[in-house]
Length: 171
Length: 115
Image (tube, rainbow over all chains, first blue to last red; front, side):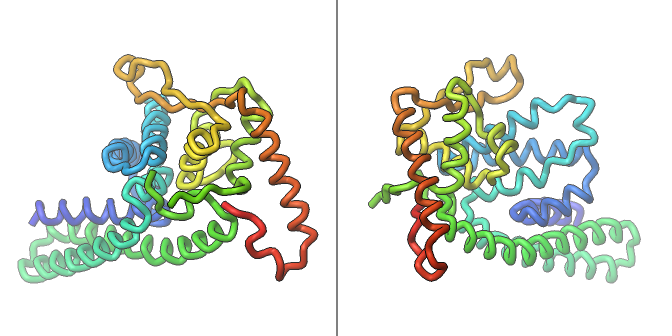
């Protein structure tokens, strides 16, 4: 159960990270040190995933910037929201949009299953884990709903302004 | 088929203006992002396009040892002095087009600015 819950939490974090709104909530929930560590891992993941030279530059700059933060300041630094657009770019905006509903679905199923286990076993120890999964699923869902609305509006605005990054053209 | 834009987009013009205003400056993406607020999804492709498609900028990897510096090398951009005239002309064209568009009636503005 713990392994399954861990997988769900990781999926929820990645799912939440794909939208800036979800990442902002994670910034708010997660304490500084963990937040910084996660951001660093996301930046490394972005460098690996980057399908375009521009996405790789963005991820490299992000990691370089994180590494220049003083060790003393890392405990209070919350950079996850900065990572969200870079992660989206690395994954590819179109692919990110199709991933998010999957993450939301997996997490909602995971949260329900964990809740079922708690109710069936009446083990109070699982209640904390269930609450974590439910919270992260909710974060992912909120990020998805808000992000979709924001990204649709953003996309229309960027198209109107003719931004070079408004499509998913690979270089 | 690749699409060669005729005039610079607003974010590309903002980025290029930073280099034209300070031709000796060598900047990296994050620095420009912080200063202009252009989102990374727009900024980095625009920088690449300005350097590789239009040849207004030159780029190189930062000269550091990533192990020693404990961070990856950034990509640094600077104005291509050989093309500085063309860069200034492109910016002037953007400014000119923008003032023309501002004077046009709302209904006829569509398609006035290309990517």
